[in-house]
Structure formats: C-alpha cells, structure tokens
Length: 166
Image (tube, rainbow, N blue to C red):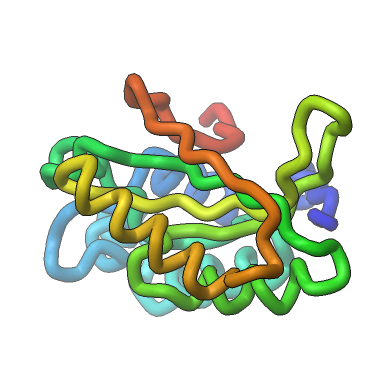
C-alpha cells in the first residue's frame, strides 16, 4: 500500500529540489552537484534531502527509466500468468529475480475474463529472444502455472509520475 504524502509539508528548499529533478537528473558525471549548483545549494545537502524525501515516501524511487526501443529492444512483452494464489508471492519473487525480467508484480484477477495474477515484463531485440525469456519464466513456474499470455507493446507510452509546479 502506498503512503499518502502531503506535498504542502515540503519546505521551500525541498520543493525546489523536487521541481529541479522531477524530469530527470542531468546526464553528467556528478548530477547532484549540477542540481546543487543550479539551485545555489551544497551538493551534500541536496543528496541528504533527496535521501530523506525518499525514506519519507515523498519520492518513491530514484532510478533509470530506459527507452527500450532506443536501446534496440523492439519486442517488449508483458507476460501474464495464472498461478496458484497460495504460491503467487514466492513464485513472483523467483520470477522477479530472473535477469530477463525488468519488473514483476501481483495484480488481482478479474474473473471470468481475466484469470491472471502474476505479471512480468520481458524485453527482446527480436520476437525469438523475447519468447526464450518467456520460456525461462514458464520453467520457473512449472506445473503451478495454469495458463499465460504475452502482450507485446505496440507503441511507447510516456512514463511520468506526479509533477509539482515551480
């Protein structure tokens, strides 16, 4: 369950840091130093505040969001699996640990039309590579999987979260 974060509790410096970083960090050797320089702050203070905001749930995570298409991965498939509910967490952890899976999570079923409860994203340079990754997942799940599908992307969706105004 996600925390509700009241952004009005951010002080002025926190808000400036969030606004300066919410579209991404600068692509330089020391991005936090660049942000600090832009805001007239000390780099150590920027890093300390970002760590605190992440720990407090103001910032969910700081990470890379790759454009898989630009990296040559044209076959991006969300695999959906119907696994036993009693084993879903354990199986999901095993699937999520596979190198070929970029993210894996549980979702509720919507019966009778949608029996799938385990989702795992794979990325392949071609369809055969993606299908090999799907086979690896199927091997991990074994006979505890009743059915699955692969939903390949047909276009790139913009990935952004909440944005604060300056």
